Length: 414
Image (cartoon, one colour):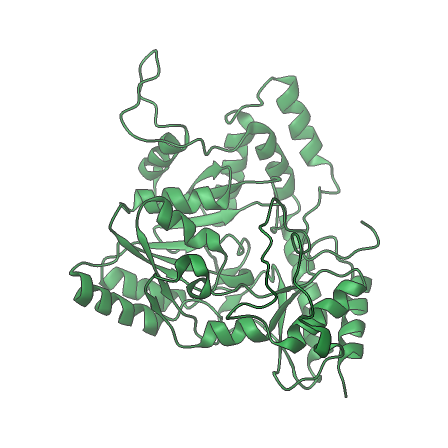
């Protein structure tokens, strides 16, 4: 592992606080999805985000699912959601029998375009006779979106706004942490996020009543009888006391992680400032990104060594640190893919043991959503074709970053 540089892996705190909480869980036999660590972690998060109620869950995807459920989403409904993001923003919509309606991005933050959002609302009302049931905005790579504009639209049409801040813990908009502006806010503590519980997430709720309803759904929706009585469908979504212990320890180093990611981003930014053909995605006015991942765009005319071999053979197995099982694609190309110079740069880094990745492929270009309504302006497709995510996690050293920069510059054909 020491010979490789991974994109974004969290690590245990230097203070060993995680081990203390985990050992306490074992010593007290609180190893189930309840116990002092779960409440303690929720209280820590509540304090950090400014006092809104929080429910600790097994994943960020579960948090999206329960937020949609709480907003009344069900079969036959439509939900506006950002196209340029990970599938966890849209898949839960389909879990509930609803239809995702994809909204393209604006070019500044790369997040949901407010103008397209309102156009989509008007068009869906005209076409279906009813409003979308919810709006899900994501904060790509930690960058906040145009929250004021999106919230104003959501409030005016009386549509609940859900913030998918899975990548945005610690990011702020006008000095306020993201995930706290909408009716619900989603956090993720997957192993590659700003802090980790090994796997886990949380839902930021508007009040105690909403929190209790979410907790009820997350614990199989049991009724108060001395036996198991179910009058609604529930889910096994709570976070375990052991994982919450890891989270409590990680909260002690969150500010250190944020400072690290921002320092890494600044090194990349300064290094590429005068490199023609490479653009670093930087903060926007009133928005402070956590720079969960630092990202660059390669001009389509930039020449990179090895472009002729960029798509010479199909990829087999999971790319980089991806977990789980993947299907073999079978073909080299899809109808929407990164430009050859982007793939050539990814391969140049890979040869040196450095993991990088293309930007998220827009959901409206995913085969599974080929029949879903989409309101597009070409922004996310253009960004996907040009963009590359660079190693940014807590285990990435300044020396690693300087080596990455050197390889990228040496890979450019002058």
